[in-house]
Amino acid sequence: MTASFSVAENPCVPARTSHGHEMLSLRQLLTRAHRIEDVALPLPPAQSSLLRILTVITARLTELDDPHLPRATWTRRRNELLQAGHGFDPDTIDTYLNAHVFDLFDPHRPFLQDPRLRTQCVKWAGVNALAWGRPAGNNTVWRTGDHSDRTPHPLPSHEAFWHLLIHHYYGPSGRCSTRTVPGFHPAKDPGLSSGPLRSTLSFHPQGRTLYETLLLHLTPSPGDTEDLDEPAHTPDACPWEEDLPDLLAPPPPLTWPGRLLTGRSRHAVLLEPDPAGAHVTDAYLTWATFHPRQPAADPHHIIDTQPGKDAAQRDVPRRADADRALWRDLDALLLAGDETTGSRRPTVFATLNDLPDTVQDHLRVWVCGFDQDPKVNNRLWYTALTPPLWNWAQNSDPQAAARIAATRTAAESYAALLAKLTTTAWQSTLNPRNNNARPARRGRTPPCRWTRAALAAYWPAAETTFWELIHAGAPGDDIRPAFARTAVAALRTATRDDLIRHPHAGPALARAVITLRAAASDRPRTPGERRGHP
Image 1: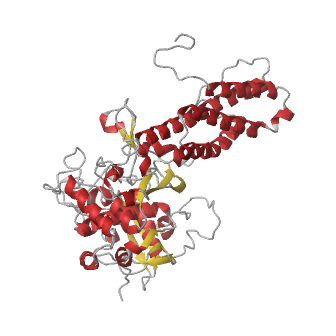
Image 2: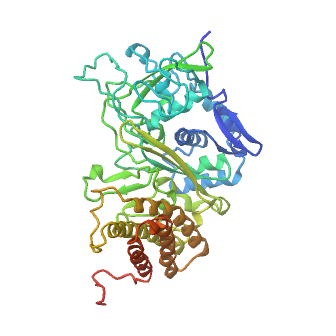
Image 3: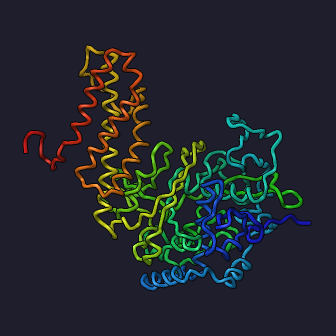
């Protein structure tokens, strides 16, 4: 008997419903999308990846992937689907899913895999290399558990599906299993290059149901751009909708939405099942292409512009940083952005101002970040869910959007001032004869103990201050004093014990408190205006 596990038919995606959590197949997920609150994968990067795949399937089911639809027609059709709220057509779902192979262990076209690896690779990578979080190879075991390369535990097939998604989107670069391709004789093995979402931050609009969420993920055809090829020249397709790629030929140009959202993987994977198909016991992991990466902007990324760099490297997606609170990126979502702001909000938010009021009023944003280095090290993945916020967007309420931007800027400026003053106070405490000592330049030395503790206390409190100011609709004159109080409280919390131990700490900290409070009353000066010279 041939092993089989079709993600279209077998439960593989946890979903949150009004009755609790259920494990559903893709067919059940799409059929019941209007009655499901959300998908709830325990691995956030897998959920962010799956949402991109479901977005393309949604575009196919609703025919909103038609590149010839005028923008107004596209918007009207999506709004009609949102207002109807009866879900996707079951017959259309069946027609689409039956037309393609979604079996993880199909011998000829396994879903999101390359069966040629069975003959082109001589060495398995091991199931531990597939499963994110398990030790593999010579890596030290940092987490508790009994996983090792000598006794690898099989991975349930539905969990292997989640890890397969993460490899395609967030996979590492570096060495991998050697792959021998007929006609390709490189001087050295090309190795892996990182996945298209590696170390990035993704922003996903979220509605009241999964059906709403998937429709909100859609974007209209971008038309003629430098990054995407005209659909008339290159038919759009997802990996499961076309034949295996010719590894020697250049990849087809990126097209919308299939290749943009699902066709940029740099990794080739092949899963080895047990006889029943219930578990994955081994896996091949190697490179999928040796051709250069095609430039493209993911529609769920904030794009930061670096003016000093070449045009090809000027725009980069905002990086995930586990030490940075997600509310600090809120104004980048709500403000339209241009070349003067240094950032552009995700493309997926560009059409949300045209939504029906009932949908827009409940729109939240689910954020997924995976803090990784560019190569192999994975630090932490994290998520956040905003309150309904789109009525504060620049197009809907310019004053609210501007207030959010000003509040976030004030929070950032007080964090910088707090770090500077605590460093100065620390140096003055240790060397009281030189109270005017200037702190070392940023980046040359690590922050002192007071600075680390003060910032650790400041940022959680600053988030509370931020939301209190936003919900209260505080005028501009109240913003800086509020963060001054927050910074002073953080400084006192971080240094309370040292006031007793260090006799010179009191005067040094008093000077810091006076400076923080004085900064709250400083009137913002116009360019060219000097202090004391209006």
